[in-house]
Length: 273
Image (tube, rainbow, N blue to C red; front, side, top):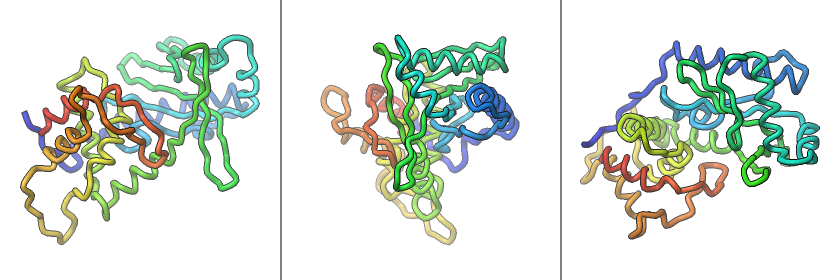
């Protein structure tokens, strides 16, 4: 069907952003009250996922990392049974104190808070690992398969995405591409799952030298459209069975990400091109 990627086409309106901020602060305060004995509604938490990377649209989930004291990690790692699951339940109970009638449940690695208007927060409890060099990564629970602990580096991903989206590189094209792919996914392929980190990692690698025209810069004609170039890049990384042929890495953190949704990404790119 074709769908041109335009500049600032999918902006979340100010009322929705205000509601997101209000709920974020109330959830943060609830967690801080239980785990830090603090009434702060901003400390020990920050947006991650697509909202944190700047690639969310108005249908996106809101992912929030809440840092907990390391003493809590020592407690839950040594607890009898599935420690990660027990941790998710403890965070769930903390949030229920503020939202007692809201649909709240543990789900694998996060606590899902689903409001009656379908706005959905995914709360990732995590423990900071601070290196001598000043960098910080986070350890978080995975309640699957009896319970495990995994690591993530969301701030490195955010920094890398922001840098590549900058005026001197893509002039906003990176974020707008990621948002448009989400929009097409949600409007035309809503029954299929396509993860946000796969979208953002693909676009980060596929964008090459493409960018929105800068001030005082003449438009350069190309033999193919930008949308077709994205599809061509996808095809070049796809084998005869439809699987991705490379270990796709997340921007900044360089963590290998799942390409389980690779075929769905292809469907969306073909619809755009």
